[in-house]
Length: 499
Ligand SMILES: [Zn+2]
Image (cartoon, rainbow, N blue to C red; front, side, top):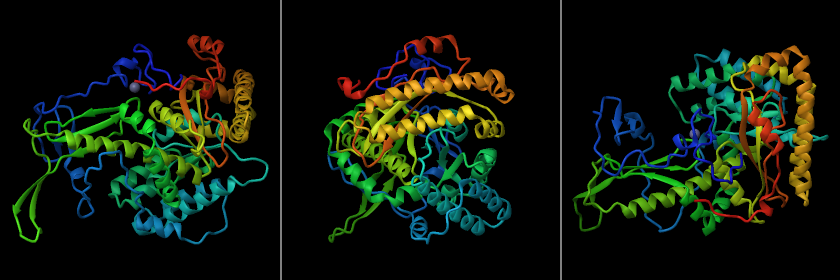
């Protein structure tokens, strides 16, 4: 799959759902028209915003007092990175001797077991591990004899991410949701669910393969870099116009809400509520009293356009800042940020098209995935198999090459050849070794990923597509695609804005 190409209406959807593109992420009509009446009654827990969307009442309560008022600027805007005071304390914490990742993985579960009923002790233990993990990952980057392949992604389910990347990554970083829940002071159920998620991955975490990372700590460590990169992006009209062209808007809805999603992205869009302010007590000194009404009903006589434009400008800034946070956090953890969303891949490729941008390559590859294989089996196979290690070595070499080779084309072409060779070795292993036979039924197909690498050297503005060839027993269509396997460079293409 080439993320820079339009998807065919009848192609299977990129997101992996068993639907055609036109029936899944290719459906761009908003689910309701402005002001369309709500057909469901509200209840004690949920409020309906449109005929198709509701939200919990809880979500309407903000824990912090007051909401900042931002006046329209008439251009895309972003807000600075927000650093939680608890995160700042951790950033300033003294550094101790580094422990290997498997040791930290085991310590994590000891903390869970010993602090079950004491939230403060749990928070302290998890914070210590978060700092230690950040430090350990940072030091891997400096390891003599070669940097391991470390990938990071915060968009998809951790188990799915591991299934997609285990065959070529030494370490797979996922957001530490226990840390996030404790920092955000979420309720005990949320914390428990996050712990349960990590327990499910326990064999992989204890092997040091899956590494939960404190995302907020990574972003905070480089907040200045995120802000600077975002401000620079916001000054690029080509980039902001392109992001705006990718947004799907629903609203104002029946309840004066507006939703914004990006085409071909995961469904984590953004939402705004229109708040109507009415002066109830006008004072000569200007200190007026207001009432503010959230969740008012759609008013056909009201001009929503300035509000809509302001929110679109903010949405553009949010998408750019979010991409930069992911890239920079990845850099802090010495990991390559990986996205499975074509929207984000296109964004990375566009950002990287200019030489002064700190993202120098976006690698897009169709790779074998192991959906649903149980973590213990995967951990065993990954730890023992020579063919897997071989595959990882190839990727490691190629990623290094893509970073510091001026003639990046050769490095990436070489990666295609090396991966094909490594996959033949893996194929041989699968036919002869029992533990791979256990895994093969789970090899359901190809999944697409994109890598954005942030590094100090200036090089490849490239997109690589390696199609098929990695793993045996794929469907016929994959075999045909292997014949059509190709590598190409963005630099060799005429850049075109899509849609
Ligand atoms: Zn889809």
